[in-house]
Image 1 (cartoon, rainbow, N blue to C red):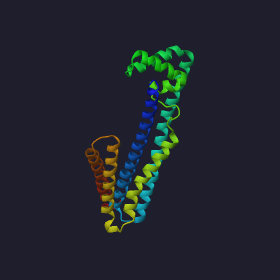
Image 2: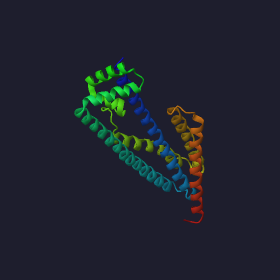
Image 3: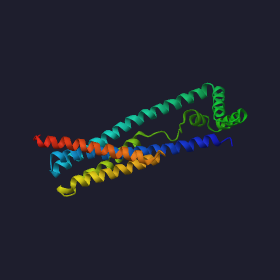
Image 4: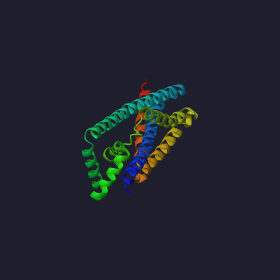
Length: 237
């Protein structure tokens, strides 16, 4: 029984990490769909040229995916630096004052619902097995073996955005000219409905509001960019 706190913390942390990756992937794909759809639909409002649509779509895909990857790399690198700094400080405190750290661990386990005697025994056993891991899990919520990886995050964001962006790009350049716009709009709205449903499912929320927000936001983005493109095309810009 005394080993349960460490086991539960690691398991919960791993589950939370997987859910965060899934949410990031869904949001990245959603961004790819909306931003690229807005771009190509706007260009379609100004021009029927397939080459212009393909050029604009590819440029938007590459710019967006690289921007997402760079932003995610910087963000996760900062998080990893913070985790490493927290672990280094905990390691130093364990070396300088192990008794105070043992008391601290006992108090945190007591605060989680264990009786003082059981919490003390659990803290002693966890400390004997791996003091740093015990404090990292209970105090910091960090698994020292599963620190965030900025390269993985950047790659996942790049891939998710690219996959999302490919849908409106292919939908606008492959169909015949007279059908490309409505095919793109329908495809994009269906994709946004799916990503809204999936993000709500990951967050254990009602899917209806998430789907409505996604679809309404995407429809508004395409309407605005198409109106802007049509206006520019009409004045010969």
